Image 1 (cartoon, rainbow, N blue to C red):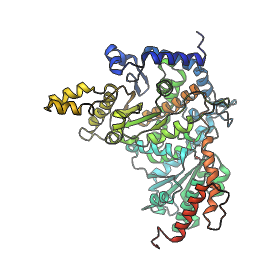
Image 2 (cartoon, rainbow, N blue to C red):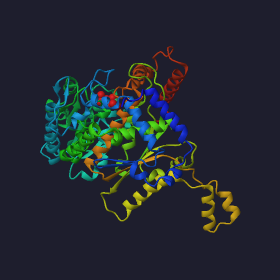
Image 3 (cartoon, rainbow, N blue to C red):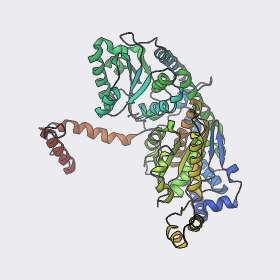
Image 4 (cartoon, rainbow, N blue to C red):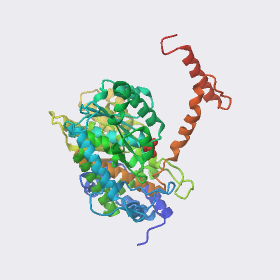
Amino acid sequence: MTPPTPAAAQAALRAHRDAIASRHLRDLFGADPGRFERFQAQAGPLFLDFSKQRIVDETLALLVDHARARGMEAAIRALFAGERVNHTERRAAFHMALRNRSTRAMPIDGVDVMPDVRRVLASMREFAEGVRAGRITGATGAAFRAVVNIGIGGSDLGPLMVTEALRPYRGTGPEVRFVSNVDDAHLAETLRGLDAATTLFVVSSKTFTTQETMANAQSARAWLASALGDSAVPGHFAAVSTNLAATSAFGVAPARVFEFWDWVGGRYSLWSAIGLPIALAVGMDHFEALLAGASALDEHFRTAPLERNVPVLMGLLGDWNRNFLGFDTHAVLPYDQLLHRLPAYLQQLDMESNGKSVTRRGAPVDGQTGPILWGEPGTNGQHAFFQLLHQGTTIVPADFIVAAEGHYGLGQHHELLMANCLAQTQAMAFGKTVDEAETEMRAGGLDATEARRLAPYRAFPGNRPTTTIVLPKLTPESLGSLVAAYEHKVYVQAVLWDLNPFDQWGVELGKQLANRLLPRFDPEAPMDDLDGSTAGLLRHIRILRSSGWGDGRN
Ligand code: G6Q
């Protein structure tokens, strides 16, 4: 069947939305006991329950039409074929090659990238295992006990999130810390308590020109040299970059430089040598298991029919909530302390990829693009912002993520965690009516007048859509699948919204302006070309700095 045009598919969805808008999730479940069986999907270890989304069968069928109308199948093929889907930078987005575990070639312009990928993986293994076993040591011959990764954005968030998530797999490896912010508080506090003789720095930067990373790397080098002398520096620094000239100019020994390529986008790079801190933290076998989990999800995304394709479904449901039901934000709520950096990681992945308003053809987009993504681990969030999720005027669709089994086996902690996770999705979907609240209070012994007075405050509207993602256990494999599913969801939405998710021009202006402002802290620098607010702020800062506020001189 020929798919409808994108406009026709969207019009059909809008008409359908109007027809079902008044139906509450309570009614949908009441009328259809089979929802859970039909509105679920599985990809490897990921089980997705989306029966608590505000959809019926027709919604799903129309959403899949919408995907077809946008050429979803061809777009997935183009991604895996190594086409230059990042058209503004004329690059492929080929992160799937980094985790390809099969013998299949992964060519870009006819050249298979797999030999390079395997070569770098082998050198990562040799280095990471050498450091972990104490065979590769610092300048004094002492084994490395700490690794400090210096990087920012895509060269920080992915490895940091995964290193935290895989803490149970660390074994006897070194402690791995991360410095990203140019604020010297970050470097100074990260180095506190470390012994230079047992500290290894990994400078991670695709371009090796990023201002924050270079400033931190220079200061780290000075810290090391002041403790052990200049000659010790090469023994304590490794680099991960596509810019081999710059790593060598910095003084990193060529054997300690781990390469990646321009077809790896920053926020898609944790699977490349940017993952070196992960391998140092948990060992190369676990890093490769992470790759295998992601690779399995890639196969699912590449081959599963749209109707059962987990990333496609995640993307379509997100679009339904964003563009048809009109919800502006999306919460990711891992019921897993080890995933405490997942929301921050996904914030970059999603908002830097799809926070755009110009289509692939350079025209203004029609409709809404990336939602504001946010979140925190449960159960902590329940004691903070969940009030708004349950009773606020803004509806926040949410993903709840939970593993059936924990790692630590302490008492009943894990059951408590899971019970809270499921309970929150129940409360969001079904709520509690004013009558129910009143009856409940009466049953608890409250007098009728007081129960009636309090009932409106103690009622919950419900009808707040959620998806629950259940993993058997948070392992390197299941984490790899989970992250790859979110990556592909972002691609699916980019296709629906006709965006290039792989560039990030929107971060450039601030960088340019910061470079122009840097010399203006000099008290003599002119300011007459600046806008009134910026000049005023600079003047105020100059006065504060010269008056000695902050260092006790005043
Ligand atoms: C990610 C972005 C951005 C990038 C950082 C660091 O997709 O491009 O977050 O990762 O700006 O860049 P470098 O790795 O080049 O230092």
